[in-house]
Length: 233
Image (cartoon, rainbow, N blue to C red):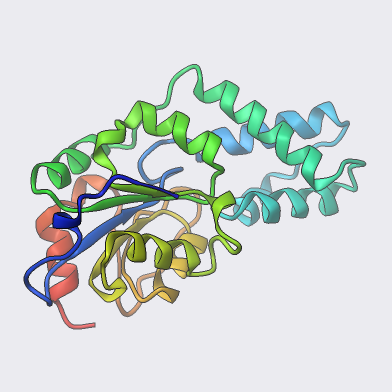
């Protein structure tokens, strides 16, 4: 976990107000969920295996260990989890080195949160080496803190990453808004007690109590996120 948040920004004077915003990375801020699938397809092709397109919904949004483990079991590939993790990260890092496309509305939202001094954290199941590369493209100045999947004992769908982000920013999880694109990430944020905006990227996500589903980040701004916190659960 990395943090640069000033102590003066860690808590709102209004106990009922929005205290922090947590943003997922792949598929939420950057259009890279497809990059991961492409990397998995290429790596397994090199190993002599073809991935079934239906597996894509199974592996999306989860921790590397879960996705890689599932694909090893599904294909019967003769490779260890540790070896496969290195190959996938290498392939993905090579791909993002050629450019990282932002999701519509991402740049505007980050700029608005920064302009209003809203403590913002990037919370991802991706590993630190990947997060740092993508943050360099997004603009590290937009994030007071970042949490990587290989820095927590349990990553998404467990609540640990979001609880760690809230702790790092001195915020109450109940007063934090989370933007996620997968059911795995939504489950993690909700388990932490956060209010969630779901922007589905690959698989649909159903609305639920304490959760709002939108079609694009273009529908999300600071007023929207503040209203999410102040409205009844």
